[in-house]
Image 1 (cartoon, one colour):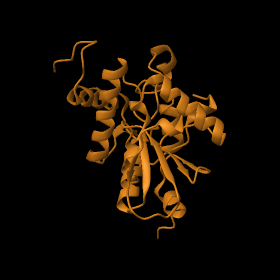
Image 2: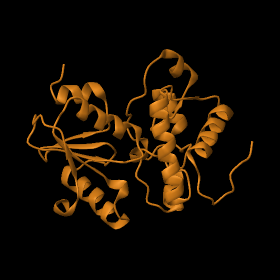
Image 3: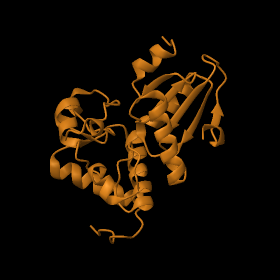
Length: 100
Length: 117
């Protein structure tokens, strides 16, 4: 499923090997999280899952829930396919990306 | 004021009228940052035109009114979230006290997962 999703990649600083953001195009905190990553020029890939077909979207959500054993809220950030941040709290994200 | 016809596509202006009306009726304040507020208003508008109801812009909807009933704006979790955090889940509606504090809303835990309203 993950392989067939069309992510958009941005940024240049490779702080982590892989930073994947699952977001809603309608959500203010998702937009803030993208703004954060852009502002700090962090290399990341993102996808607006609300713009996917309903059955694909449900598969993505259930896949994330199963893989990371956590309830799926947005923004949903996955680092190196193992660390997860749910929701956007600037201080938490700064700490994760070691930004002072 | 001319209210939009039910079932017709809504504009962002229609949605702004709706959220201002809800806030006024309940004595709530809207998010103070106009750019953030516009994102939420546009998100609600997209969801209305997509699903037929104002599904919360910060939660993923199933697209079926019966399943999404609890997250139709203002959602069932708005009051307990305001009581605990000073604002609702998406940051749209603030209590007067939170608004006057000058703090900015941030992501809060999803009460929907805990099954409590």
